[in-house]
Image (tube, rainbow, N blue to C red; front, side, top):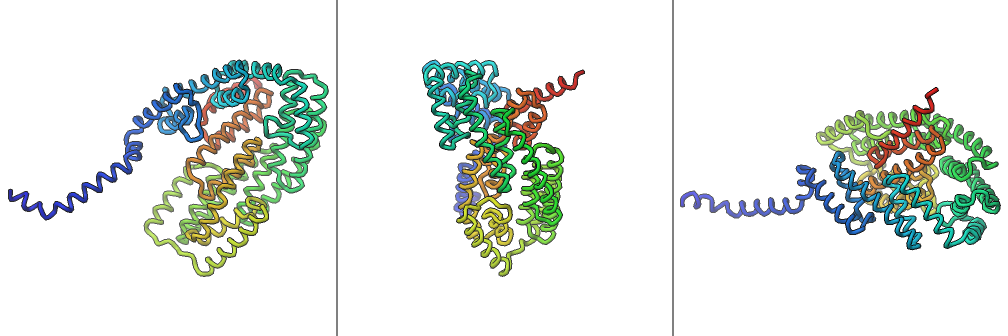
Length: 492
């Protein structure tokens, strides 16, 4: 009785503490569970994925599809065999459903499910068989003459590539069925001439990456096109000019412009390893700036320099250690606040960014784009609400830019847009999905190049995929195929 009387004055405080503990457990139970019991969370995702697979919900943009759920589980527990097997089952289900859609004449659905099956590395023999049946059924239903008329109209309208009903994909579809179809061959030749003129326009504007993507697409459609060597030669000259400018920019400390120039040099395709080394030098310069900023207690600026370095070369042990050191130093030292002069300069940069955005120069030219102006303003006043609002305003444009270039198979340009989305404050999940999508597209490019015997091109595509997401489904199998192909070519 006496003990209860002594505790009575503290009863309200004990009740409050118990209420806070209960609320915390409700709000953060998922995070706590994920941290303490990852196997349980992975198993829950596997069960959800299995249910989605059984219901025929193979993929969904909102993350509720079987594919997304299995991949989420693998992100938590990458060694779990049931998750890999489940993803393989999704691939087989997609291929099977594509075959049923072909038989029922639902060609749009068949193309979609076949693409999903290939993305998930369904057996090549199975997907090739479905694709062949799809081509035959479409030819029987639509008729080659109808496709030819559609292709000619698309070419005259300037719709050459990037959509299934564009001119070049339609000519390819006809030639897959009838390789010697004269009118389709002539139409493809004219369309590729128009397409390569656009590449030359890109080169005149200084957009080497866009030009390189177009020239690679032209070579994919017809490696022997008569105008292709001239375009490739012009690309090599432009890439070399970009290298010289990038060298000068790096010496002058213009790191963003240097990185863009070296990316353009890399897009030329002739000296990829040397270009990667140059990008590594730019990354190291960002590291040096990060150290200097941290020494001045400008920790936000230091973190941004580390982010820029990581965007160029990926996460390294040096970057991880330096980031930890800077974060530890930031916790024990006051953050340097912007001066009045910094704020005035940031406001001017915001006005310049708004003017650049109005001109349509949101990402290019380097140094004068709205994106670059905003990054400079953020470096001066990282906590300014006006800067944050302007950065958020550009986020949808960066996302749309990535999606457009991914659809157009302009993978180098898509990478630039993806990096901009991250730098502008895009959420981590969207960035992860974008890296996975871009890596899978690089694997598809590598598969095509390997099938044509272009070993160097296949290796470059594999390296690009690894740099984006080393856990992309199918990357290990493709790496083994590239290795085996290389060993075969070296055998006397």
